[in-house]
Image 1 (cartoon, rainbow, N blue to C red):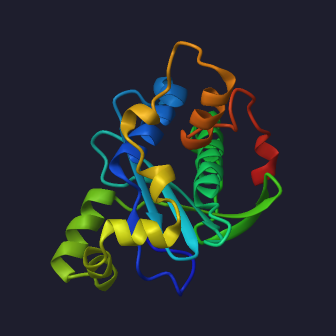
Image 2 (tube, rainbow, N blue to C red; image 1 turned 135 degrees about the horizontal axis):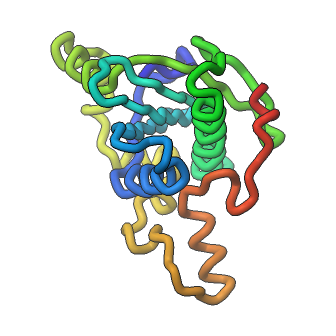
Length: 208
């Protein structure tokens, strides 16, 4: 993945448990559209930018439909988790448009700014195959990939101020079926990935 900011060099991937939660949310909301196609979730945390790629790899095709979202965040405000949730919603809106139009919708092929939920968000659509991209990076000894391997996850998460929010055990981020007290549920909601900002779907017009 290519970050939006030229200053974005060192990065760390979203914790595995959190990526699995995001994947679960997308499967739950787009299962009839995804079918047997492979869903790819990639997330990176840079010093001043969070980036999310949600890809759909159709069976038998090399190209992959990627809905990529980038947002700036302020380490001092410790708002990286909130921005990641915004990215999830925006990627979901892109996917919804894509499937509703049967793939005929036009998305920007380079980072473009959009107003979204009162914030600035950046979107782009790519067709890079994640598996082939990883293989190419490994063969070429990609410099950016080397940077992340040198940086310990704990240090990077501490730098991004999202270690506690993103690295919680999976049972803390699960979606319980039984109702808990309001306070516990609010805490859980703040940590877990959401789509469309919760039960109420957002207007797609925000991205046009």
